[in-house]
Length: 281
Image (cartoon, rainbow, N blue to C red; front, side, top):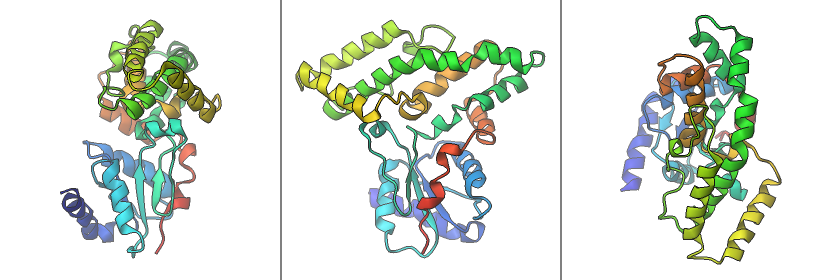
């Protein structure tokens, strides 16, 4: 069934070949994401390729299967883009000819761009100047207060996926862990959540093995507590940062509109290697 549905979604690209000089396949099928990807990819590759369309295939498995199926069968430049996901904590990130794994958990992580977020605050507030808004926003403090508890939580989520995948992990609502409208998590709530999850994990492995696993992950990331890389932007970071923004300015801007606006200006430095993985026939 996956094969048939995937083939139908991929077939659409044939009808748009005159509009594009490269075929780009992505995971996200949600409303607004094609536009976001087109904006980002045109900023990255627009001088070299005509990109009027990208083609959502509906999940990482589908995109990877499409890439595998297309190997040695391509007659046009192609690129399949997938999220880094929680596997980044295990040191897994696969990039190959025609396949690009984002260096972040998901595409939303690219929106954690301090200056772009501050631009939005300035546009949304009719009176306050940038310096005043920057002090209130205090992105550095937000990052500092969230990074350690969230890294520890996501290491636990990684182990949950490995040993008790039936247990809810990343999709646990971050609002249940928030301290207030500052967009900062409550360390006590996070620790309780970690303890609950570890209780499930040690039904499968011993506590010593659990601690060894955590140490192993910490060694792999080598002290690189990068909130932008390892934490889900979609489920955790963006909801937290938007909460913080809305506590500073009175705005009713929708989340998808916010993403569109940030995609036009955020730093793309971390994706500068993407062109190296385009497949050329």
